[in-house]
Image (cartoon, rainbow, N blue to C red; front, side, top):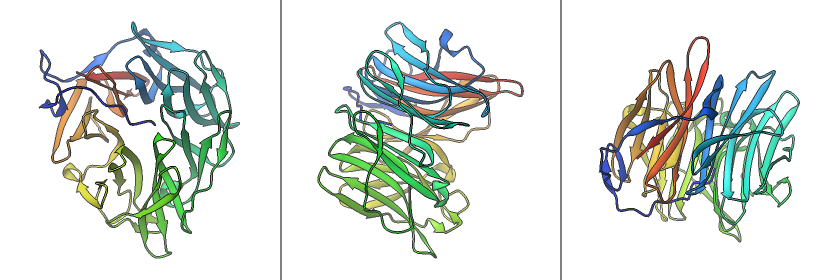
Length: 354
């Protein structure tokens, strides 16, 4: 996902997130829309500009999925028809004329492309399950896929060549697996994953500066093959301000953020050693981690560059889990998406911080 948008606002700490002081107490609230009336969930959201954003989700089952595309308009969220049905895993928005969705189904891998007018089925190479896609305003887009990549299995790095997804060569060390991608421009691409020497696993980040790839070995224990942590998300706020989300899985280590300041990497332990399933910019120089939740309220853990603050979303029926968030540029808002799960149904939701 593209994670480079920023708010042009003065910032203060309000309800755990750094935003301009509003006339009311800043908080997470529910966003209603007829487009949310389906039995399923929303998984990803991405904005390229104030009025250029989409969310994507899926209803049905693995054997019969239905793709749901929701587009932001000045009048709110509206549903768009998908030319293909599959389990969507991610969406990236470059600009009003370029957006991508990736996913999979029983018949193979899947991909959609928005050309400014309509969504078309562009497919996806058979290189593993597509997991993440990220795009920049200049049209540069990368995606990662794999077979148990989070466990050190096979992975692939794909690049959009203007009409299709194609394999791209990255000088990875042997026994490497890439699990996350963030794209800021054609000359600023970040990949995160792991590499193994057979006995120990190391966190790995690769950076493309437009000319060459640079390898970064990250500090901190990542476990051993078969019992390893993963770098689930990478968020590049600038070439000298990058966060990677480390999830311990079954490794003997901690859940943490790993931060690059342009010179060195450092570990930032998450509150109560909480595991995150998502990591997004806050639009004001920090990041928001979405932790695993088991109650009727979503939870957002905000790191402003020096300290953590935790805030909850509104109460819902069922178990609420936010899965992705993104700033909506120029508005002072952050938009998150997720699913409230009950025994007999799932309810997609959108929440807004302002």
